Image (cartoon, rainbow, N blue to C red; front, side, top):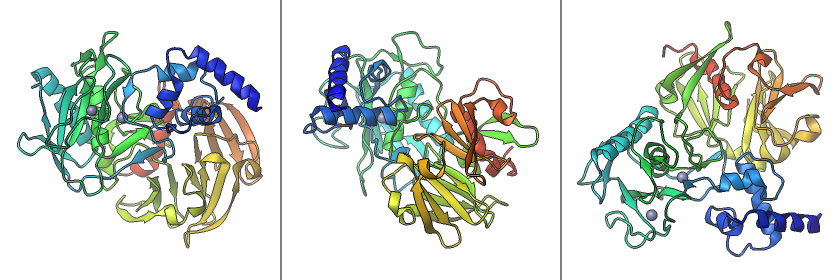
Length: 435
Ligand SMILES: [Zn+2]
Ligand SMILES: [Zn+2]
C-alpha cells in the first residue's frame, strides 16, 4: 500500500499546483514543520478531510483542493478537539469594543454594530462601544502589520497575504487575561459593507467575517461543521446562530423559531454543537456540550446540575462524542469517533462496558455523523445523506436508505439534514412557554 500512496500523493501534488499542500497544512494546524515525510502529509490530509466531512481518501483530490482554495479565517483549526474547540472565556458579561485606525465610515460602523448584535442575541453578553477602555479592538490591516499597542506589543505573528485566501484573524482569550483582544481584517479584500446577502461576485461580506472573528475573541475555536458560524471557510450564505427548529410530534410539522436557544435555556455556555441530547431514567433531559453534561428538569426546564463527564468517559477522552442514546434500562450508550462506544450506568455514572461499534452494532458504518432514537424505538444513524435504522433488541440493521424527511413521515422543504437534526430540541422546548 505504501508505494501506491506515495504515487497518488505525488500525483495529487502535481494536480495541486495552485495550493502548496505542505505549507497549507502547516499554516492551519494539521502538520508541524518537522513532519515533512510523505506519510505525515498523507495522514494530515486524512485528518483535514475527516474534520471537514470530505471523502477520506488520503490524497489531495479535487474536493479537498477546492476547499483549500476557498477564502478563510487565518486562525489554525483544531482537528483534535471535540466537534469544535472552546478556549478560555471572559470573566465578565459586559464587554466593550472600539475600532482602531483608520477611523471607519458609518457603513463599517453599522456592520460592526450588527455583528455584535448577532452575538448579543444568542448569548448573555452585552457589548458596547467604548473608546476609553475597550475589551475588543477591530482594525483593518494589510500584509505585515503591527498589533495595537493597547492590547499587545510588536508585529502580528500572522501577516496577511493580499487579496483572497486569508480574510481576517483574531486573538482568543488566554487564562486570566486582562488586556484587550484584537480582530485584524485584511484591508486588501473587496469588503461588502451591506447588512444583506446580495453580494456581487468578488466581494466578501464584512458582516459574515466579523461575526466569525468575534466568536474567536469570545473564546470559540473552529468547527468543521459547514453550517456553523465557526466554520473557517467563507461563504455568502446567511448566518444561522443556534436558531431553534421545533418539531411537533403530533402534527409532524417542522417550524423554525427565530429564537435563541439561550432565551429558553439561559444557563448554557457558548457552543455551536450539541454533541448529544437524551433523557435520563429520572426524567431529566441531558444535553452534552463541551463534554459537560447539563441535566435539565423536564417539567420546568431549569438547570439541575452540570457534571463534567470527562471523568466518566476516561477510556475515550481523546475521542469526539458523536451522540448518545438512552436504553430504557437505566443506561446510556455514548458513541465516539474512531468506531468506539461506551455504556454508562446512569444510576452511578459508572462505565459499564465499552467496545467497537462495528463489532456490536453490525452494519452501522464507521464515521457516521449523528445518532438518535426516534419515537418508534429504533436507533437512527446518519452518514452524510444516508440513514441506517437499527433495531437494538434484535441487534440488527433493519433498513438503510437515502434520508428524506419522509423517512419520519415529515414534510418540510428546503432544509438541510443538519437543520433537521436541530429539531431534536423539540423535546426540550415544545412545552415551554417561549412561543
Ligand atoms: Zn476563525
Ligand atoms: Zn494580525
